[in-house]
Image (cartoon, rainbow, N blue to C red; front, side):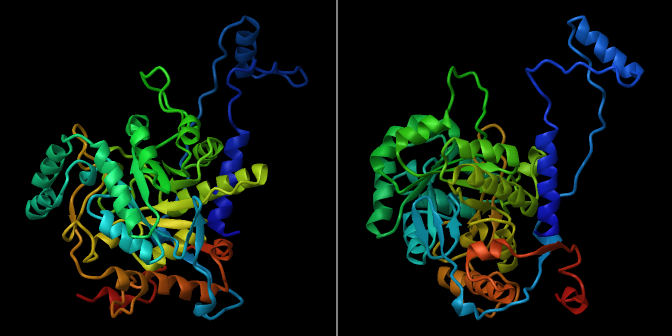
Length: 431
Protein backbone atom coordinates (compact mmCIF):
# COMPACT_ATOMS: atom_id res chain seq x y z
CA UNK A 1 0.00 0.00 0.00
CA UNK A 2 1.40 3.46 -0.88
CA UNK A 3 2.16 5.89 1.93
CA UNK A 4 -0.60 8.29 0.92
CA UNK A 5 -3.06 5.39 0.64
CA UNK A 6 -2.06 4.02 4.03
CA UNK A 7 -2.30 7.47 5.64
CA UNK A 8 -5.79 8.07 4.25
CA UNK A 9 -6.98 4.53 5.02
CA UNK A 10 -5.88 4.83 8.65
CA UNK A 11 -7.58 8.20 8.88
CA UNK A 12 -10.83 6.78 7.47
CA UNK A 13 -10.71 3.87 9.91
CA UNK A 14 -10.18 6.26 12.82
CA UNK A 15 -13.09 8.38 11.71
CA UNK A 16 -15.36 5.34 11.63
CA UNK A 17 -14.30 4.30 15.13
CA UNK A 18 -14.65 7.83 16.54
CA UNK A 19 -18.16 8.55 15.30
CA UNK A 20 -20.32 9.91 18.16
CA UNK A 21 -23.16 7.62 19.27
CA UNK A 22 -25.92 9.98 18.23
CA UNK A 23 -29.31 8.90 19.45
CA UNK A 24 -27.88 6.37 21.95
CA UNK A 25 -27.76 6.83 25.76
CA UNK A 26 -24.39 7.90 27.00
CA UNK A 27 -22.46 5.13 28.77
CA UNK A 28 -22.23 5.74 32.54
CA UNK A 29 -18.69 6.30 33.77
CA UNK A 30 -17.38 3.57 36.07
CA UNK A 31 -16.01 4.20 39.56
CA UNK A 32 -12.86 2.15 39.11
CA UNK A 33 -10.77 5.30 38.97
CA UNK A 34 -11.48 8.66 40.64
CA UNK A 35 -13.50 10.91 38.37
CA UNK A 36 -11.94 14.09 37.11
CA UNK A 37 -13.92 17.31 37.58
CA UNK A 38 -14.89 17.17 33.91
CA UNK A 39 -16.10 13.57 34.21
CA UNK A 40 -18.09 14.45 37.32
CA UNK A 41 -19.82 17.20 35.37
CA UNK A 42 -20.72 14.83 32.53
CA UNK A 43 -21.82 12.11 34.99
CA UNK A 44 -24.01 14.54 36.91
CA UNK A 45 -25.62 15.85 33.74
CA UNK A 46 -26.41 12.32 32.60
CA UNK A 47 -27.92 11.28 35.94
CA UNK A 48 -30.07 14.43 36.10
CA UNK A 49 -31.45 13.79 32.62
CA UNK A 50 -29.78 16.86 31.10
CA UNK A 51 -27.99 16.83 27.77
CA UNK A 52 -24.35 16.10 28.72
CA UNK A 53 -21.86 18.80 27.79
CA UNK A 54 -19.16 17.56 25.45
CA UNK A 55 -15.54 18.29 26.10
CA UNK A 56 -14.16 20.98 23.76
CA UNK A 57 -11.98 19.63 21.01
CA UNK A 58 -9.37 21.49 19.02
CA UNK A 59 -9.98 21.27 15.28
CA UNK A 60 -7.08 19.53 13.63
CA UNK A 61 -5.98 19.55 10.01
CA UNK A 62 -4.61 16.64 8.03
CA UNK A 63 -2.48 16.73 4.94
CA UNK A 64 -4.04 16.05 1.56
CA UNK A 65 -2.26 15.56 -1.75
CA UNK A 66 -2.77 16.57 -5.33
CA UNK A 67 -1.14 15.31 -8.51
CA UNK A 68 1.95 17.52 -8.12
CA UNK A 69 2.60 16.24 -4.58
CA UNK A 70 3.11 12.55 -5.36
CA UNK A 71 5.06 10.22 -7.61
CA UNK A 72 4.52 6.67 -8.90
CA UNK A 73 7.22 4.21 -7.87
CA UNK A 74 8.71 2.17 -10.76
CA UNK A 75 8.21 -1.56 -10.45
CA UNK A 76 10.55 -4.50 -9.90
CA UNK A 77 9.11 -6.01 -13.09
CA UNK A 78 8.55 -4.22 -16.40
CA UNK A 79 6.59 -5.16 -19.50
CA UNK A 80 6.33 -3.88 -23.04
CA UNK A 81 3.71 -1.10 -23.30
CA UNK A 82 1.95 -2.83 -26.21
CA UNK A 83 1.16 -5.77 -23.93
CA UNK A 84 -0.90 -3.65 -21.56
CA UNK A 85 -4.71 -3.64 -21.49
CA UNK A 86 -6.09 -0.14 -20.88
CA UNK A 87 -9.78 -1.06 -21.12
CA UNK A 88 -12.23 -0.68 -18.26
CA UNK A 89 -15.81 -1.68 -17.41
CA UNK A 90 -18.19 1.09 -16.50
CA UNK A 91 -21.99 1.17 -16.13
CA UNK A 92 -22.49 -1.84 -18.35
CA UNK A 93 -20.13 -0.48 -21.00
CA UNK A 94 -16.72 -1.79 -21.95
CA UNK A 95 -14.52 1.20 -22.70
CA UNK A 96 -11.38 0.55 -24.72
CA UNK A 97 -9.78 3.56 -23.04
CA UNK A 98 -10.52 4.66 -19.44
CA UNK A 99 -11.54 8.21 -20.35
CA UNK A 100 -14.84 10.09 -20.20
CA UNK A 101 -15.40 13.52 -21.74
CA UNK A 102 -16.97 15.96 -19.27
CA UNK A 103 -20.57 17.09 -19.63
CA UNK A 104 -19.77 20.66 -20.60
CA UNK A 105 -21.07 22.89 -23.39
CA UNK A 106 -17.58 23.62 -24.72
CA UNK A 107 -16.58 19.95 -24.73
CA UNK A 108 -19.45 17.66 -25.74
CA UNK A 109 -22.05 17.99 -28.46
CA UNK A 110 -23.50 15.00 -30.35
CA UNK A 111 -20.75 15.09 -32.99
CA UNK A 112 -17.98 15.14 -30.40
CA UNK A 113 -19.69 12.38 -28.41
CA UNK A 114 -19.65 10.17 -31.48
CA UNK A 115 -15.96 10.95 -32.12
CA UNK A 116 -14.99 10.09 -28.52
CA UNK A 117 -17.03 6.88 -28.64
CA UNK A 118 -15.33 5.80 -31.86
CA UNK A 119 -11.97 6.36 -30.16
CA UNK A 120 -12.97 3.97 -27.38
CA UNK A 121 -14.07 6.42 -24.68
CA UNK A 122 -17.41 7.79 -23.48
CA UNK A 123 -18.60 11.39 -23.79
CA UNK A 124 -21.32 12.75 -21.50
CA UNK A 125 -23.82 15.29 -22.89
CA UNK A 126 -25.14 17.97 -20.53
CA UNK A 127 -28.94 17.87 -20.91
CA UNK A 128 -29.25 21.19 -19.08
CA UNK A 129 -26.81 22.90 -21.44
CA UNK A 130 -27.10 24.71 -24.72
CA UNK A 131 -27.66 21.55 -26.77
CA UNK A 132 -31.08 20.98 -25.18
CA UNK A 133 -32.17 24.63 -25.07
CA UNK A 134 -31.54 25.62 -28.70
CA UNK A 135 -32.15 23.85 -31.99
CA UNK A 136 -28.77 25.15 -33.13
CA UNK A 137 -26.58 26.54 -30.33
CA UNK A 138 -23.86 27.65 -32.77
CA UNK A 139 -24.85 31.31 -32.53
CA UNK A 140 -24.55 31.32 -28.72
CA UNK A 141 -21.23 29.48 -28.87
CA UNK A 142 -19.88 32.01 -31.36
CA UNK A 143 -21.04 34.89 -29.15
CA UNK A 144 -19.37 33.40 -26.07
CA UNK A 145 -16.12 32.87 -27.99
CA UNK A 146 -16.11 36.44 -29.31
CA UNK A 147 -16.72 38.13 -25.94
CA UNK A 148 -14.47 39.01 -23.01
CA UNK A 149 -14.46 36.90 -19.85
CA UNK A 150 -17.01 38.85 -17.81
CA UNK A 151 -19.38 39.35 -20.71
CA UNK A 152 -19.15 35.64 -21.54
CA UNK A 153 -20.65 34.75 -18.15
CA UNK A 154 -23.52 37.19 -18.71
CA UNK A 155 -24.17 35.72 -22.17
CA UNK A 156 -24.29 32.20 -20.75
CA UNK A 157 -26.56 33.27 -17.90
CA UNK A 158 -28.96 34.81 -20.40
CA UNK A 159 -28.82 31.77 -22.69
CA UNK A 160 -29.65 29.48 -19.78
CA UNK A 161 -32.95 31.31 -19.23
CA UNK A 162 -34.22 29.51 -22.33
CA UNK A 163 -36.18 26.39 -21.27
CA UNK A 164 -34.86 22.84 -21.52
CA UNK A 165 -36.90 21.16 -24.23
CA UNK A 166 -37.92 17.52 -23.90
CA UNK A 167 -37.94 16.95 -27.64
CA UNK A 168 -34.31 18.08 -27.89
CA UNK A 169 -33.31 15.55 -25.22
CA UNK A 170 -34.65 12.74 -27.40
CA UNK A 171 -33.11 14.21 -30.56
CA UNK A 172 -29.61 14.61 -29.08
CA UNK A 173 -29.57 11.09 -27.64
CA UNK A 174 -30.67 9.69 -31.00
CA UNK A 175 -28.00 11.67 -32.84
CA UNK A 176 -25.35 10.07 -30.65
CA UNK A 177 -26.80 6.59 -31.03
CA UNK A 178 -27.03 7.02 -34.80
CA UNK A 179 -23.25 7.40 -34.73
CA UNK A 180 -22.99 3.82 -33.49
CA UNK A 181 -21.73 4.62 -29.98
CA UNK A 182 -23.14 4.56 -26.46
CA UNK A 183 -25.04 7.67 -25.37
CA UNK A 184 -24.38 9.12 -21.91
CA UNK A 185 -26.31 12.12 -20.56
CA UNK A 186 -26.06 14.27 -17.45
CA UNK A 187 -28.43 16.31 -15.27
CA UNK A 188 -28.15 17.98 -11.87
CA UNK A 189 -30.09 16.63 -8.87
CA UNK A 190 -32.67 19.50 -8.86
CA UNK A 191 -33.75 18.57 -12.40
CA UNK A 192 -33.37 14.79 -12.21
CA UNK A 193 -36.98 14.01 -11.30
CA UNK A 194 -38.47 16.65 -13.58
CA UNK A 195 -36.59 15.41 -16.64
CA UNK A 196 -36.77 11.70 -15.74
CA UNK A 197 -39.66 10.87 -18.08
CA UNK A 198 -38.08 12.54 -21.12
CA UNK A 199 -34.73 10.90 -20.39
CA UNK A 200 -36.26 7.47 -19.93
CA UNK A 201 -38.09 7.81 -23.25
CA UNK A 202 -34.85 8.88 -24.95
CA UNK A 203 -33.22 5.69 -23.59
CA UNK A 204 -29.58 6.69 -23.18
CA UNK A 205 -27.12 3.96 -22.27
CA UNK A 206 -25.69 5.78 -19.25
CA UNK A 207 -27.38 8.31 -16.95
CA UNK A 208 -25.31 10.75 -14.86
CA UNK A 209 -26.59 12.77 -11.89
CA UNK A 210 -23.94 15.34 -11.11
CA UNK A 211 -23.50 18.51 -9.06
CA UNK A 212 -20.73 20.31 -7.18
CA UNK A 213 -21.37 18.05 -4.18
CA UNK A 214 -23.86 15.16 -4.15
CA UNK A 215 -24.77 13.07 -1.11
CA UNK A 216 -27.25 10.31 -0.34
CA UNK A 217 -28.66 12.38 2.52
CA UNK A 218 -29.86 15.82 1.46
CA UNK A 219 -32.28 18.07 3.33
CA UNK A 220 -34.48 20.57 1.50
CA UNK A 221 -37.93 22.19 1.68
CA UNK A 222 -39.27 19.48 -0.60
CA UNK A 223 -41.43 16.94 1.22
CA UNK A 224 -39.52 14.00 -0.25
CA UNK A 225 -36.71 15.47 -2.29
CA UNK A 226 -34.57 13.34 -4.58
CA UNK A 227 -34.21 9.78 -3.32
CA UNK A 228 -31.47 8.29 -5.45
CA UNK A 229 -32.41 4.66 -4.90
CA UNK A 230 -35.94 5.35 -6.16
CA UNK A 231 -34.71 7.35 -9.15
CA UNK A 232 -32.25 4.62 -10.15
CA UNK A 233 -34.93 1.94 -9.87
CA UNK A 234 -37.44 4.01 -11.83
CA UNK A 235 -35.02 4.90 -14.64
CA UNK A 236 -33.72 1.38 -15.21
CA UNK A 237 -30.53 2.91 -16.67
CA UNK A 238 -27.04 2.45 -15.15
CA UNK A 239 -26.53 5.65 -13.17
CA UNK A 240 -23.29 7.43 -12.32
CA UNK A 241 -23.46 9.92 -9.45
CA UNK A 242 -21.17 12.68 -8.24
CA UNK A 243 -19.39 14.58 -7.13
CA UNK A 244 -17.89 13.67 -3.80
CA UNK A 245 -14.50 13.38 -2.12
CA UNK A 246 -14.91 11.36 1.09
CA UNK A 247 -15.21 7.82 2.42
CA UNK A 248 -18.53 8.14 4.25
CA UNK A 249 -20.40 9.96 1.48
CA UNK A 250 -19.05 7.52 -1.12
CA UNK A 251 -20.13 4.46 0.84
CA UNK A 252 -23.63 5.83 1.34
CA UNK A 253 -23.99 6.67 -2.36
CA UNK A 254 -22.92 3.15 -3.31
CA UNK A 255 -25.59 1.77 -1.00
CA UNK A 256 -28.16 3.67 -3.09
CA UNK A 257 -27.39 1.42 -6.06
CA UNK A 258 -25.23 3.71 -8.21
CA UNK A 259 -23.24 2.21 -11.09
CA UNK A 260 -20.25 4.51 -10.72
CA UNK A 261 -18.97 7.43 -8.62
CA UNK A 262 -17.49 10.73 -9.80
CA UNK A 263 -14.74 12.10 -7.55
CA UNK A 264 -13.63 15.72 -7.36
CA UNK A 265 -14.86 19.03 -6.01
CA UNK A 266 -13.46 22.10 -7.71
CA UNK A 267 -10.22 20.90 -9.37
CA UNK A 268 -11.24 21.66 -12.97
CA UNK A 269 -9.45 24.36 -14.94
CA UNK A 270 -12.67 26.31 -15.50
CA UNK A 271 -14.23 25.67 -12.08
CA UNK A 272 -14.06 28.30 -9.32
CA UNK A 273 -15.90 26.41 -6.54
CA UNK A 274 -12.74 26.30 -4.45
CA UNK A 275 -12.37 30.08 -4.68
CA UNK A 276 -16.07 30.93 -4.33
CA UNK A 277 -17.06 28.36 -1.71
CA UNK A 278 -13.72 27.36 -0.19
CA UNK A 279 -14.50 23.65 -0.51
CA UNK A 280 -12.58 20.76 -2.04
CA UNK A 281 -9.95 18.10 -1.42
CA UNK A 282 -6.91 17.57 -3.68
CA UNK A 283 -7.58 14.82 -6.18
CA UNK A 284 -5.07 12.16 -5.11
CA UNK A 285 -6.32 12.10 -1.53
CA UNK A 286 -9.95 12.35 -2.66
CA UNK A 287 -9.55 9.43 -5.06
CA UNK A 288 -7.80 7.30 -2.42
CA UNK A 289 -10.64 7.92 0.03
CA UNK A 290 -13.38 7.07 -2.45
CA UNK A 291 -11.53 4.04 -3.82
CA UNK A 292 -11.16 2.76 -0.26
CA UNK A 293 -14.94 3.08 0.14
CA UNK A 294 -15.39 1.14 -3.10
CA UNK A 295 -13.16 -1.66 -1.83
CA UNK A 296 -14.92 -1.81 1.54
CA UNK A 297 -18.30 -1.88 -0.20
CA UNK A 298 -17.13 -4.62 -2.56
CA UNK A 299 -15.89 -6.70 0.35
CA UNK A 300 -19.27 -6.34 2.06
CA UNK A 301 -21.54 -6.88 -0.94
CA UNK A 302 -19.58 -8.40 -3.83
CA UNK A 303 -20.68 -5.50 -6.06
CA UNK A 304 -17.90 -3.43 -7.62
CA UNK A 305 -18.66 0.27 -8.14
CA UNK A 306 -16.14 1.98 -10.44
CA UNK A 307 -14.52 5.26 -9.41
CA UNK A 308 -14.03 8.10 -11.92
CA UNK A 309 -11.59 10.88 -11.01
CA UNK A 310 -13.23 14.00 -12.44
CA UNK A 311 -11.21 17.15 -13.01
CA UNK A 312 -7.72 18.55 -12.55
CA UNK A 313 -6.09 16.22 -15.09
CA UNK A 314 -3.85 18.13 -17.48
CA UNK A 315 -1.14 15.66 -18.50
CA UNK A 316 -0.39 12.00 -18.96
CA UNK A 317 1.31 12.04 -15.56
CA UNK A 318 -1.85 13.31 -13.85
CA UNK A 319 -3.88 10.68 -15.71
CA UNK A 320 -1.64 7.87 -14.50
CA UNK A 321 -1.54 9.15 -10.92
CA UNK A 322 -5.34 9.23 -10.80
CA UNK A 323 -5.48 5.55 -11.75
CA UNK A 324 -2.73 4.57 -9.31
CA UNK A 325 -4.73 6.41 -6.62
CA UNK A 326 -7.50 3.90 -7.27
CA UNK A 327 -9.62 5.31 -10.10
CA UNK A 328 -11.07 2.98 -12.73
CA UNK A 329 -11.36 5.83 -15.25
CA UNK A 330 -11.00 9.60 -15.46
CA UNK A 331 -13.23 12.39 -16.69
CA UNK A 332 -11.52 15.31 -18.41
CA UNK A 333 -12.75 18.61 -19.78
CA UNK A 334 -10.21 21.27 -20.72
CA UNK A 335 -7.82 18.93 -22.63
CA UNK A 336 -10.78 17.90 -24.83
CA UNK A 337 -11.90 21.54 -25.16
CA UNK A 338 -8.56 22.25 -26.85
CA UNK A 339 -9.27 19.78 -29.65
CA UNK A 340 -10.30 21.08 -33.07
CA UNK A 341 -13.39 18.84 -32.99
CA UNK A 342 -14.74 20.34 -29.74
CA UNK A 343 -17.64 22.83 -29.97
CA UNK A 344 -16.11 25.52 -27.70
CA UNK A 345 -14.07 27.31 -30.41
CA UNK A 346 -10.94 27.17 -28.25
CA UNK A 347 -12.71 28.21 -25.04
CA UNK A 348 -13.91 26.28 -22.04
CA UNK A 349 -16.19 27.03 -19.10
CA UNK A 350 -17.48 25.17 -16.07
CA UNK A 351 -20.92 23.63 -15.62
CA UNK A 352 -21.79 26.16 -12.89
CA UNK A 353 -20.60 29.21 -14.87
CA UNK A 354 -24.15 30.11 -16.02
CA UNK A 355 -25.63 29.92 -12.49
CA UNK A 356 -28.01 32.86 -12.22
CA UNK A 357 -27.14 33.87 -8.64
CA UNK A 358 -23.66 32.50 -7.81
CA UNK A 359 -21.52 31.52 -10.82
CA UNK A 360 -18.82 29.01 -9.87
CA UNK A 361 -16.91 28.84 -13.10
CA UNK A 362 -15.15 31.05 -15.57
CA UNK A 363 -14.57 30.98 -19.31
CA UNK A 364 -10.94 30.16 -19.99
CA UNK A 365 -9.04 30.23 -23.26
CA UNK A 366 -7.48 26.84 -24.00
CA UNK A 367 -6.88 27.36 -27.74
CA UNK A 368 -7.44 24.82 -30.48
CA UNK A 369 -4.00 23.30 -30.76
CA UNK A 370 -4.59 19.58 -31.19
CA UNK A 371 -6.90 16.96 -32.62
CA UNK A 372 -8.79 14.28 -30.75
CA UNK A 373 -6.63 11.61 -32.35
CA UNK A 374 -3.36 13.30 -31.38
CA UNK A 375 -4.59 14.12 -27.87
CA UNK A 376 -5.45 10.49 -27.16
CA UNK A 377 -3.02 8.46 -29.26
CA UNK A 378 -0.37 10.75 -30.75
CA UNK A 379 2.06 10.89 -32.35
CA UNK A 380 3.13 14.18 -30.82
CA UNK A 381 6.08 16.53 -30.72
CA UNK A 382 4.95 18.13 -27.46
CA UNK A 383 7.16 17.38 -24.47
CA UNK A 384 4.81 18.52 -21.68
CA UNK A 385 2.61 15.41 -21.52
CA UNK A 386 -0.51 17.08 -22.90
CA UNK A 387 -0.83 14.80 -25.94
CA UNK A 388 -0.83 11.02 -26.50
CA UNK A 389 -2.47 10.33 -23.13
CA UNK A 390 -2.99 6.66 -23.89
CA UNK A 391 0.63 6.28 -24.98
CA UNK A 392 1.66 7.81 -21.64
CA UNK A 393 -0.62 5.42 -19.78
CA UNK A 394 0.73 2.34 -21.56
CA UNK A 395 4.32 3.42 -20.97
CA UNK A 396 3.64 4.06 -17.28
CA UNK A 397 1.96 0.67 -16.95
CA UNK A 398 4.96 -0.96 -18.59
CA UNK A 399 7.35 0.83 -16.22
CA UNK A 400 5.55 -0.47 -13.13
CA UNK A 401 4.78 -3.94 -14.49
CA UNK A 402 0.99 -3.47 -14.62
CA UNK A 403 -0.86 -5.33 -17.35
CA UNK A 404 -4.33 -4.00 -16.46
CA UNK A 405 -5.90 -0.98 -14.80
CA UNK A 406 -6.61 -3.13 -11.72
CA UNK A 407 -2.90 -3.98 -11.59
CA UNK A 408 -2.01 -0.30 -11.87
CA UNK A 409 -4.24 0.53 -8.91
CA UNK A 410 -1.97 -1.61 -6.73
CA UNK A 411 1.18 0.28 -7.66
CA UNK A 412 3.14 2.01 -4.91
CA UNK A 413 3.04 5.80 -4.70
CA UNK A 414 5.13 8.17 -2.59
CA UNK A 415 4.69 11.71 -1.33
CA UNK A 416 7.20 13.67 -3.41
CA UNK A 417 6.60 17.43 -3.62
CA UNK A 418 9.92 17.91 -5.48
CA UNK A 419 9.11 15.37 -8.17
CA UNK A 420 8.54 18.03 -10.87
CA UNK A 421 11.45 20.29 -9.91
CA UNK A 422 14.29 18.01 -8.81
CA UNK A 423 17.14 18.39 -11.33
CA UNK A 424 14.97 20.48 -13.66
CA UNK A 425 16.82 23.78 -13.37
CA UNK A 426 17.31 24.26 -17.09
CA UNK A 427 13.74 23.27 -17.92
CA UNK A 428 12.50 25.81 -15.39
CA UNK A 429 14.60 28.51 -17.09
CA UNK A 430 12.87 27.96 -20.43
CA UNK A 431 10.80 30.79 -21.90
